[in-house]
Image 1 (spheres, rainbow, N blue to C red):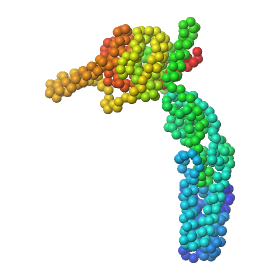
Image 2: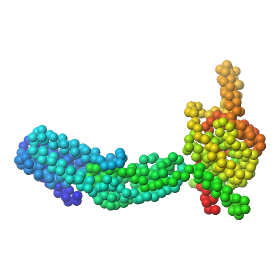
Image 3: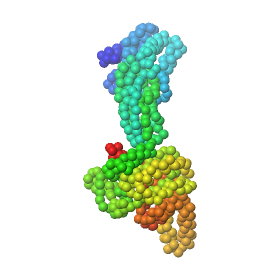
Image 4: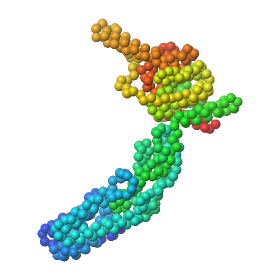
Length: 529
């Protein structure tokens, strides 16, 4: 609808209402005056789109009644027909504000269509009860307009108005990936489109837009899938016609995801490393060390700083130099370089996703030690027994053992924990402080805490984790570094006791956070080879 036609229709409606004010008696002239005031006010200060639609519809229904005394029963309804384009314009403008909530696939009526249909039925019913021919003819003319518009929409818009391009995307679990897809319109009229992915780990842009006739738009899609993500990204699409009378739900599948588990990614890195460093290959000496290596942090004395690289721990950030140079700087330590390492691994996870994270951390940690060429002793346990324990072996052999041990990871639903794991150091300090007091309550509390300490030590003594560490410690005496990989499930209360005991024995204990981000620096170094 052009601006000239809109202005002409609105001027015509104002003229009709002015005629009603001058020629009609009370109370018809009062109604005409009120409707005229609404029209003039909406010209200078347009109301909200929904309110404007309601005002326009009400004016078209009531305006013929104001002309009924001077013009008769049927002529007033016919005289308001040239003002119907105002309703057409109000519908088009209000279509953009339609609710974009996806309900289901298929076609249905919008809230606007339902409201207008209900209003027309009430108007027509009222005209029959009141035996008012003017109101009856007016409602029939408006119903004819809406019916013809609806039929036009149904003819021009197919049952599935959108078509999507097909593509695929490979992504590692926990990592972000971006791709794009093209959404095309098959309708012979413009469409208002709203897109929404059903999963919170998928985001798309733009999510709302208007497609022209047979038009298309490129949509960017960012995904960060969990381990159990779907193989195809489904997008819930909602299309609304240009009058806002019909809504069509459709499910699009533009992207097929190839989700690579962390464990599989780490296994590929490890096998790639074993392949390029096999005896007799000239590439073996050329493999650069991983700067994200855990051995770079095994020392106790600070010797320098360097720029942050993927895989570094946040606790090693040098905040003073970070603020000074305006880039992330981490501290490096010396004092334990070249020491043998003992990998202690808990092979129990709570669910398949945790098992994937655990396997990834286990393999990449063994891979880091292999790149550094450190001798490694390996011990693994579950909730019942020590699964495997090795003496000091070459790092390549330890990496091979790690690949096999990941197949023995078990998933057990952990019991609900109410209290935090005990702090052994704080517990011992509290006992010592209570013993210095001579009051009876302090003595009793010290006895209770001492009993707790003894219970923890006894539980740690018979736990598989304790047996695993003691077995390897006999073969690999200090100085050495213990790299602990555990999700702290069945061994949460035991590990603090064991680790304190090992630290007192001269070992450097370094817990490794499970499911850190992939070692991109190391992966890139291996891929280039």
